[in-house]
Image (cartoon, rainbow, N blue to C red; front, side):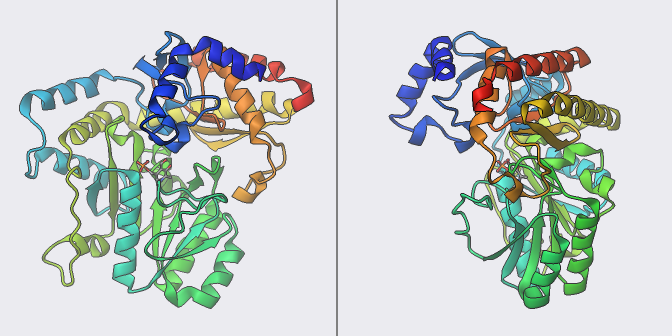
Length: 420
Ligand code: PLP
């Protein structure tokens, strides 16, 4: 209560905005994930790795729009590219050179991609990938993992009811190859697609073990099932996406988030034989349209981002910074009953010290503690996700990571022992 009162005192304009927004938006928000208690933070502007809310408070941004903000806010190359579009026109109703350039760059980086189709979001990219997999295999079932998040309509977390999708869904335990093998032994002939994140993202940055992910490849090969890697979050791990570190070549890969530096973006890429289904010359072919698939702002932003910020060196440095930050944060967290999980520049803080290898390991964790930590960090000027999500962006310096750690130490000390 004290924490909520302190937050309300510091954010009167956010509170007022929330009261207004609730009159026309369910819960006063457009993205469920932004539902902070007692009311969401309304942000007015951003620059580099800083955010300023509508009450004039500044924050060091360690949420990075849930991983979208890898390049930081308003990177110059992206601003220039988007200004070029403002001057030359958009919504052209025609193919553009830019969509070719982005597709070319992605195919050059990610070995498993022969052809690419763009979508307006990561959710759509996953829906398209599943649809391609089921149509080409002629099967009805998709195997997903407990805690998997593949978009607003494809959420397989415990409390989700979004199994309401137009295909059969089989949910298996993550990082449990025996469970997958057993499922295939009984239902393998119906499973057209395995859809998997190389690291469970929304479920709390739970990395998939290489043995598990390589095992999925072998099982899919044995049963003629299409393996889809959802790399919407994890493609930032390396120049050739996470799959290049894992030594797994999926049939299809979905991308999104940071690639267009915050402009709407999604993509499916993969083997020519699967992707050619989208070619009208194929028999049978599959029409897939979307007004914003080749959105010129997104494409121009993606070219600028890929060219200037997502270089091999930058991605490798970001990965190492993330690994360091997670290890140091974990050392601070454990004496207070928390831990940090993750991979590279994607980190999650959890209110438990027992090992976490699948989503059910978090079922008993008291998420109110993570929300307290979120508020204590925010009060000290650092914005992380309310569920403990931390992502790194390029404009942050090593000094910023140092500040993050000292702030984390203070924030943990401020959480009263009685609630830990
Ligand atoms: N897949 C993963 C792994 C994600 O984390 C997300 C978004 O958080 C999505 C898919 C959905 O992407 P979008 O929000 O662009 O629809």
